[in-house]
Image 1 (cartoon, one colour):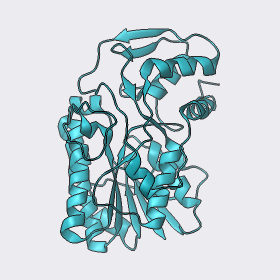
Image 2: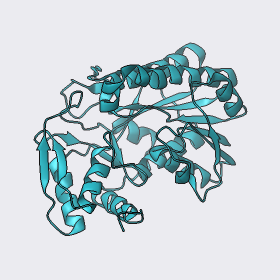
Image 3: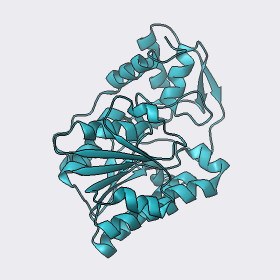
Image 4: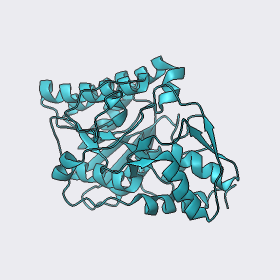
Length: 312
């Protein structure tokens, strides 16, 4: 099998590429990335072929997806705060870029695994979030990811394209960047903890998230590509856990062996209060899946940080 991963040099994409390259059914893995947030160094030591370019380049997509069996479409402009700063850029990459990928896949009959986000649930308060709930995005990022999944499922219905849409929740783990304004909570907390700085908590810290280790996510993506899993509705990719931001800080404190001071700041526009997945649909499609517990995943992530310059 020949698999293309858009955003393949990014945080999640590089893990997906590594997992795919380890599967005996996969003969070639191609990572397409414009390096806006990804880093080719994330693929060091692998046999993954790297193509530098944008998903907005239709000609490049046609050439890269020629003879591909599946595409794992991870390329996106991430982050709710980033989308608030520049909504049009998020739309261009996440919505228009997805249509360009789908068009290239339609021409080649390529199986598509498209990635959406739990942020599409937005203002819907019901927990756990199941896939039949309405969607009420609270940010341009969330709206653009809803467009990603809507276009993907529409192409499946209209053109018979095999499609699986996965709604990611709070993915964390090695290779996730820290030390910038849009960093996710886990790398931001670890960066602060290892540098001896207070952990910045937006709001009261009692907001909850369903954290998913990136290695588990990569397993699902690879299995979906190899088995050509498709579904006519979105599928949550998380496991029904519900952990507060302050609880994450406590777990990290236990891992580093000392108290970690926190600094509370105002809540951020576009952030949801609570997030928790209903994983029944996921379990039906991937019955053998065993997620990595949060404590173990955080330990792996802290260990990876210790390999980086400035954290040793």
